[in-house]
Length: 201
Image 1 (spheres, one colour):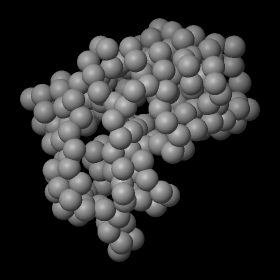
Image 2 (image 1 turned 135 degrees about the vertical axis):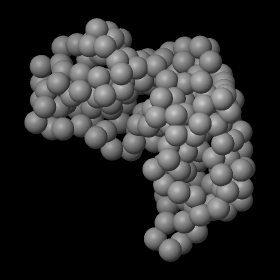
Image 3 (image 1 turned 90 degrees about the horizontal axis):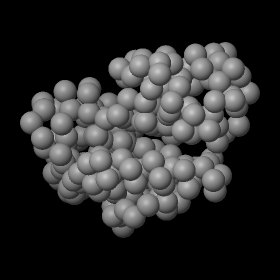
Image 4 (image 1 turned 60 degrees about the vertical axis):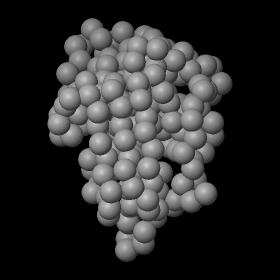
């Protein structure tokens, strides 16, 4: 169980260019951190490094709580990328069930998450027919269906309307109150209180 994540003098390189170096921070249970910076500053790359999809040029990502780094990432993290990663030819129901089963959730939990996010009426539609906000809510459904402590979110609310942002605030607040952690790359502020981590400042 992840109780905290530490960045220890992390440096990230992409395409032969160092995006940032000597980045240190700590995120503990019940906390949200908003990663800010200009386009190309390394926000997405930082999330990918925490998720284990990108090896830092220097430094280390440390998970506190007893699990090995591999187990912490495998069983303790959700990564929602900037792109929703949905198959356009599948129905929303098929895509939801596939993603949630992959994360270890039951079909009942997946459908309950869709209900919570106001998507029940859209489940029969092919995902390519959903609006951008609906696609994002479908991608976010597995956060609820398959609970994991660390949420890594890349521009999670960019296409979401005001009602969706209010709902996301409720869901994020409940996650933090339950001992979760949120690390989010953002341009717009999160709808909850969050510490800022500025790249390129």
